[in-house]
Image 1 (cartoon, chains in turn red, purple):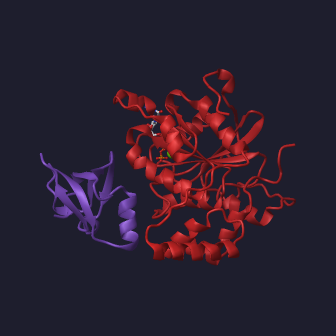
Image 2 (cartoon, each protein chain N blue to C red; image 1 turned 45 degrees about the horizontal axis):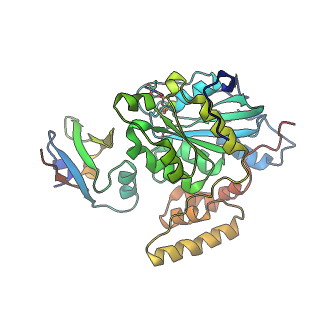
Length: 291
Length: 76
Ligand SMILES: Nc1nc2c(ncn2[C@@H]2O[C@H](COP(=O)(O)OP(=O)(O)OP(=O)(O)O)[C@@H](O)[C@H]2O)c(=O)[nH]1
Ligand SMILES: [Mg+2]
């Protein structure tokens, strides 16, 4: 139900979130004794996705310098650091907005090229996406550098189908005589692709409609599944994925986890050892829902 | 030749990555894949590290990383 957009009535109501501190704060999450998630809650809080007074958690991910914080500011009315160089956002920042009667918590993440090999800043983004289980991941991509930006979209699609692609900087693309076929991309990726120019507030209503649609859907597309041509690898992945799923029932992307383990990814190994991975099986959406 | 030997006024195409494991993964994640066009943009005084332009972005590599990237010079 992506609206045609463009109407001002579609604009969000900025709502300062329960924690709009911009830096990594361990005390941001108000405790919630009655929450069924109270144990996982501590960890989710560290990931910036603490249960709180909101209906949905939305994470903003993407390559460095694609306009994530600009989108964040447009949606929340807050003022996150924006500038034309990479690596401005080094920790999560959080804010909130309401749209269509639902309350959203929005998490602005540091830029990252990959979920596979990461620097310290990139780890913040990766952990929030992998273990925070947001209800929607908005991947902000640079329309003038799609070739560079799409690998991360595909990686994120391998862990979740709850994705909206914000095709940002279309004004820059236009200046360079580039037009991107967003409908074709939508078909290829299996998730909504919203052309926009966040700095000019272009496309924000469409983005909100797409976020609301994905947040509200019961049947988001399944994570993309890579099939390996090498039969030995395929067999190893399938077998290990079965064991991961057995040990952590409900983990939505056991195949992805299995592949990471086979590659010797230290972060994923640790998550399996200390049981963090099990939290993937619990919903991030807070128990304390609006009535 | 390898990337560290590529002259500054030329572009090259990546032909192979002569490294494995995490190092290889990182290079690929930064956009250094076979077939991709690359040029050396900024060298620090001692030539290490060097910033390369690849897929529309500057990527900074250490000498030991650049030496694992095989390139073929593009025609001028
Ligand atoms: N022309 C144009 N510029 C934009 C648009 N959106 C963002 N920018 C500019 O792009 C630059 C980067 O924006 P940020 O919002 O800081 O990007 P970011 O993705 O948060 O960057 P990091 O946190 O460093 O990864 C800034 O100069 C913005 O003003 C847009 O739609 N059009
Ligand atoms: Mg930012």
